[in-house]
Image (cartoon, rainbow, N blue to C red; front, side, top):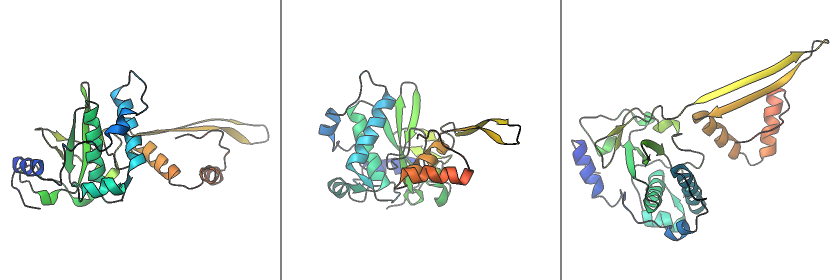
Length: 239
């Protein structure tokens, strides 16, 4: 990739690069027309439905990237890198009239991205920015466990460049990340402590639990292991 010196140069280069198809046509237009979305639907409901459609058609190859290696091959084989899946997600969003933009960045593991002296060589990843009324949200469509504003840890950086706009984005604290635990207990006359423990997770904590849970081949054994590790009985479990 050529080296640029300003972010204006970077944007011009990217918009002309076929490996950065930010305005590509939607490969799943037919499937979108038959997508089961209740009406009237919110932007969030549409985005979630599109994510499910994307992951029914494609699988992430595990490679993080900010550009497409071979989009035609990715679509035909149903396997692509993170950028290819995010570009396809954008193409579906545009079909529903959702304003969206690619956001390029240098991941935490790759080091901080400079604001003044720009270079394509400093980029390592991309996510999608979209607008819902007066609110702006972000999503990484390659991760099937991700949710709106709940991005993988390595891309939650303080400095990312929104392509097509003057804006910079802070992805470091998009969602409310909470892990709440409550315990209602009582002590019996014989000294036995019993009670009910409830745990609720949001943001990145919910993402971590969902990823851990759904990566297990046997969900029953997963819950049984929780009971064994904590010496408890689990009455209900949902993600």
